[in-house]
Image (cartoon, rainbow, N blue to C red; front, side):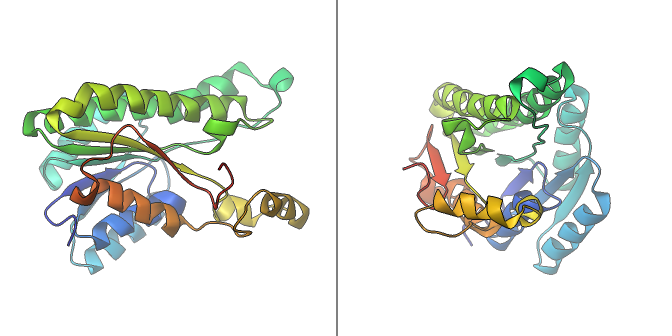
Length: 247
């Protein structure tokens, strides 16, 4: 297996893209720490699915934008699974609004979780990676971090910030054999997109050369590749999973 004897941490992994990533990494042989803020029951279901594959799993509930929680999460992962060599920063929220109507808290909440949370996790988990001179950090950004999107100034800023942060820490950590990359999903079929009106879905399809939505599995398979030794010479990159939308 590509990731046998590896320990992975996936933030925001109780459902959607994060869940698919956790299951994909487990299927490739990794033991997985599942992080969620409040979806405990769904996280327990993911844990059970991973254990049914014969891999170990742990659910660690908490807010990744809290430095104290992140430091405690590192200790819990070390105690329950061992030191993590793979970190996937997937957790994120959205608080969409037009610029003139966007409240300070809508801006602050999104930047706090989507960008600061990823920074805190990268800082905390990279300490052991530096000591072992090996590791993979994969940040889940978005195509809107590349293109922008009306009504999402906060979300797009956070996702663009993830790209800049990834490139910076890729340069910092590269000499210790730690790669850092960004995955930028486009329109992916999730609970959120399923609830969109049909006219909105039609508009989305017109932007995608492949004329179909992606699946969480499309993103997860790329993450698993980037986490493996097969991607050892890929770092500081932003790879879109978007059906050609941003080509």
